[in-house]
Each structure stands twice: as C-alpha cells, then as structure tokens.
Image 1: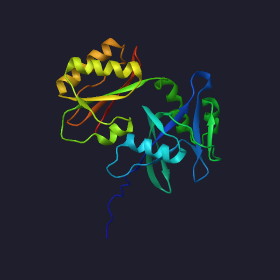
Image 2 (image 1 turned 180 degrees about the vertical axis):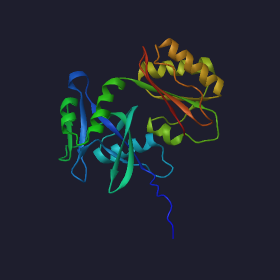
Image 3 (image 1 turned 30 degrees about the vertical axis):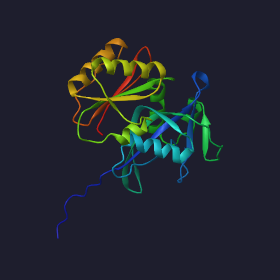
Image 4 (image 1 turned 120 degrees about the horizontal axis):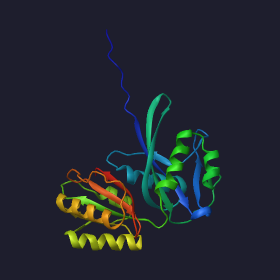
Amino acid sequence: MELGPSFSAPVMAAGAVLWRGTGEARQVAVIRAAAGEWCFPKGRIRPGEHMTAAAVRAVSESTGHAVRLGPWLGSTSYSREGWPERADYFAAEADSGAPDRDDLLWLAPCRAADALSRPDDVRILYGLERRAASGAGCFLLVRDGSYSTRSILSAYGIAEERGADREWGLRIAGESFETGRPAAIRAELEIVQELFGELCRRRLGPVPVEATVPDGGLLVLHGTRDRIVVVERHLA
C-alpha cells in the first residue's frame, strides 16, 4: 500500500497582552502555563467562535479579569506534542480587578520580556507599545450581508450595530472616538467606503488599507479623538 502526503492543519488559538496602567506605570500580565512556560493568556478557538470573542473569553477565564479588547498585535506559530498551533494576539485593557494568583504576574514590559519563555511572545509584546493607545476607542463599520456579527460585536462590548447613512455614521463614529465607547453601524458597501475614507481624512489615519469587504465583513477602526491608530479587516 502506498501512503500519500500527511498534512496537519494548525490548531487555532487566540489570546491577548493584558495590560493596566499608563506610561511608565503600565504593566502586562504574564501567566504560567501547565507546561511551566511563562506566556500571555490564550485559549483554543471553539467551533463557530470568532477569534476576537475567543481572545476575550480565554483571557477572562485565564486571569479572572474583565477585559476591553484593543488592536490585533500579531500571531505566533509553534508546535505542541508534534502538532502545529497558531495563536493570534490582541491588546486588551484590564477593566476590573481580580484576586492575586501565584500563576499570574503583573510586570513592567521590560521585565515581562525577560520572563517570557518564547522569543515570539516578546515580539508580540513589542507590538503593544506600537499599536495600543491608552483611552483609544473602537468603531466598527459592518457591510450589509446575511452573516451574523454577534460574536465579534460582543468581543468589543457592543450589543448591536445600527443602520446609518453617511452623516449619521460620522456622528456615531465621532461620539465613539470622543468618549472611548465602542460602537458599530451596518451599511451598504458604498457608505462603508465613504465613511472609512472620511474618518481617516479627519483623523490623520494610517497608511490606507483596502476598504472593500465581503458581505457580512467589517472594518474595525481603533483610534482617539485626534487620529486613527489601527484599521483591521475581519470576516464575521
């Protein structure tokens, strides 16, 4: 009998660099995994679960902290017991306190870099300072379609998206970035593209990204009252 090639699809996981404080007082959470490694909190993505929702759930379960999800920081790939795994990480601000635990340390970023067991996790840590801004809010532009966005909306603490035209969408986005409270609107692709372009022009947006998204897809804009910090495209 002749055997064909063997393929191993990676196990998908999601987690976050959980942080608290600002400036020189900023600390990040590092946890001790079952294998004894020090890493960021993460967990495997469940069937049908969006990776943003998986990150929030896994971090909350691992640390006991409620979290406020921020920008995507990158991904790492590694092997566990001979099976490939990939973990996507987001920035996440700790929204509430939790009791101290022996398997969780709050460390200044420079000390966390020394404590982490994997070099790739250190790379993700450096992304925090580049991409996460204290007080940044997020605004979601959802393209009309038949797909449910409930999982990803819940990850950002948004109950539902609202329909909007261009001017109403600009008003909602402005309120979101001014207050730091997340919000989302659902609109036709043309309006999504117009709003995206205008928001980037008004707030010194980053290098332009592709604003075309498939039905049910969405753009996540992380920013402050002055500028757009990060733009992500997601599939619901």
